[in-house]
Image (cartoon, rainbow, N blue to C red; front, side, top):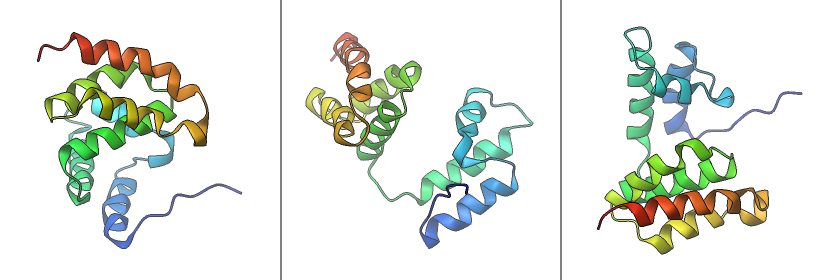
Amino acid sequence: MEKTTRFTNVENNAVNNLLKLGINIKTGKTFEVCAKDTEETKPRTEAIEKLYRTIKLEQKTRDLAYLAVLAATERKGVIPLYVKTAKSNGATREEIIGSILIGLPAVGDIVAQVLPVALETYDEIEQ
């Protein structure tokens, strides 16, 4: 039986719009869409942006939460980008560490493997 993701009523409309555009949230196509924004993918990118606008979090909190997800899913390649974004939105070094390590009990040491990349990136950015 296929595992499904449950969303709140507010998120359902945005998710349904994404699915109508052929974006399968479970397969991670959103990364492909964001990486290749062309005329063909522009409607998809706009739908993703619309979904993000329904998320009622401050930008720094959203950045830190997304870092936690990236660490838990071993997306090492994009960690530096989101560390830079989080830092530019006011995240401290300690908050970056916390957002990455928060997944440790759930997914194990895979999150610790991205920590050096995150901290190196954070420390390289001029204050």
